[in-house]
Image (cartoon, rainbow, N blue to C red; front, side):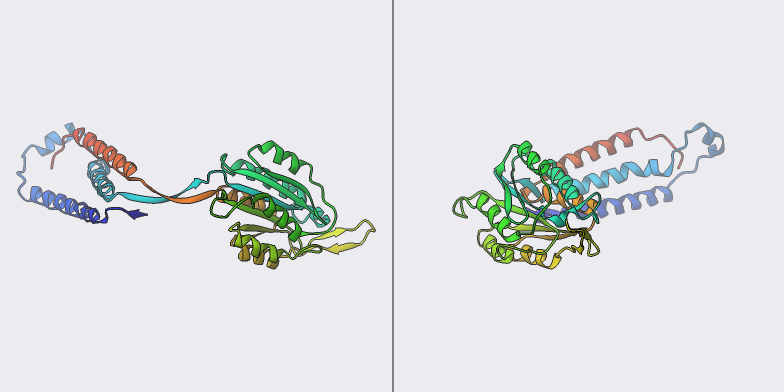
Length: 313
């Protein structure tokens, strides 16, 4: 949080001063109090007031004083707001290793479910595209605001073949590289893969190109090192993820890298990215919120103070 007029923060000193004045006033009242001889007779007739009830009006008044002092300083907060016409491309690995069941019910099903949840979290203003790849990027859907098209792509995914990560990223870049950087709407790529590249272009070279275009690639390395799959010939082979390469792709492109070992991890990552990749940080003034809070607290303090019950000192 920042303040446009920080000099008014000095008004916060009124809070401890008011509290000190209240303490002094109470002590002075006790010092000069006149004892009433019939206290024992009248005490049962007066309603009892709990200590917190007596202190609450003062606490509310001090809180309102603090809120109004902050309002005078014109506070600003950094908030995430949707980027206009932002494009996000979901790049999903559907190589044969995605059949591994170390992520229940399978890597592919976990990825499909998380991607659908991502569509619910991404701002409505954003356009979403999709690239599915194995030995090559065989399914390509340009960014659109029609979420049903992307859902249809996700529903059609099936796993087989090798892993051409670099070719898939290049295809995703082609979908969003549609003009000079300065005038092009913001874009990002979200890559989910579970293994090392086995064919096609070097994905790190594509990541460098993405950085030059200011298109970050966020990566999710899916799976555990103990995972295996059975080949059509009956051979069991290990299919561990390749988080090192995924981290390098993210770093070179200016994106973020994540690692997921179960379906819940994938869902949390996609949910988080859904609210971030098509948003931007913007500083906004929130003076009204503090002023309104201060006014409400002051009104509550006054109302409770007026309802104070008579009591004996």
